[in-house]
Image: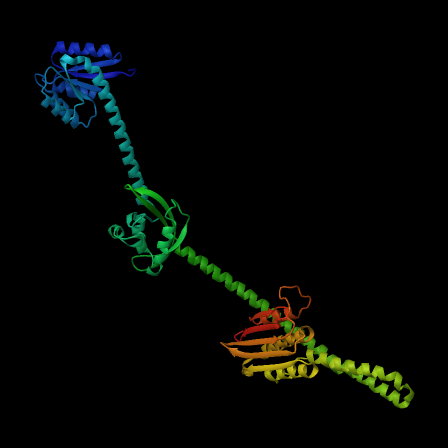
Length: 483
């Protein structure tokens, strides 16, 4: 044994003390021996000498081993205490061992003493290590309890199987309004609104195999019935020898409300921007209508008048020179065709009279289609025209006109059905045909459909185009009247 071993001998017989010291020095090279014989010396040596082990005779003149052992135990000391006596009954030996002695040695069996000392010292060292670990565990538990209890965020520990709440911290008590006793009589589902508890059970079961979970947002309910939005993080732990989970709770109600308000503001600003863009689109369409109207009038009033004048002079030339009739007849025929074509163009360009109702305008349009082609047309109109403002009426007219022109030019249809009605404060339009149809996903060079979409969207409406090769085409439009 390399370290100094301090042995305290409690013995009032000088010869026995000398014999015992000799045996100890023979077996323990690096040892220091202290000798006391009464209570006072013994108590003083426990403090000043600070022995590693105590060897005590049983009967001293003014003191006893039992008293010495009791004093040692009262000090909560784990110093090994070995009784070294001349005689001892088995009953006494068992009693002193039970009282706390490490061992007892008869003086006629001193050869066993070194082994007993080493065993007692080893046992004492193990006991010190156990107490040290226990102390660390207690300190760790104390620190954990302090950190858990004083955490600014609410924390709840619950049993993984029963979902029973096992512990809560001060922040949880303050935030939710329940006392600690009330919490301990609850399960975690009690914090959720009743109509959402089945969702909680499902999610808990899905995550039961996991030890840690990322943040999840829940709706919780305080004791006063107030709903809050919380962000939770869950960690698997062992609590009092049972599998449990600790929930760390962060109330994000105000943050979520602020985010929702921000999104609402952003959506409102975006909507305002879209509405301004639609106003610009309407203004552009209105300007285009003015330009179309001007071009249509110019074609009808000026160009057509020039053509009529040219035709008149050619007819006058035939009257004066009958021999020119064969030469002039074809140019007159071309002029007549041009006049008719310009009249058709002018009709499409000139805005219809605002005093004429939408139903009449549509019937006139479809009548002309029927007169100038083999297409059969049908109009179902069920709406009060006075509900429609002039801008919207003209816009609806142009949308239908655009689709009718597309049908005449491209659809090879022989039937066209137009339906206009109102429902739920909106105007509904359906233009369908039985023509050749087209692939709506294919790239198109024309701008007719784009013009319709722009007109519909400028009035906050919706448009749906359904078509396929050989299946005809359906254009469905819905425009709210509040726009």
